Length: 116
Image (cartoon, rainbow, N blue to C red):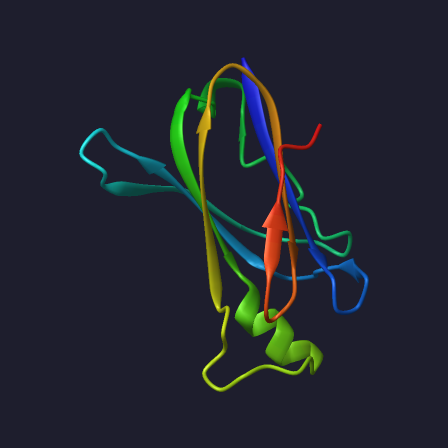
């Protein structure tokens, strides 16, 4: 069995990014996307539950979409109009095991890594 979790850090404020919409799509063999789940980050910048766990974890390719533009507009961070980054897609391929995919972001940049 496997698990996929995430959290979002706001590098402008130096803390968790609260109330970020996160969508998870499964990518089919034809490249098409199908929505698996939608969550929002909590006060710690994490989703309350893993995006995938137990029976819902199926190895394959997935795309996480983080809606960071609304967060930065809400917090008053300097944002271009239109925003340079509004939605950040991350495409990952999962096998068995625990995957933690954090997003560190600002209105101008982002980075990620496979966490533990």
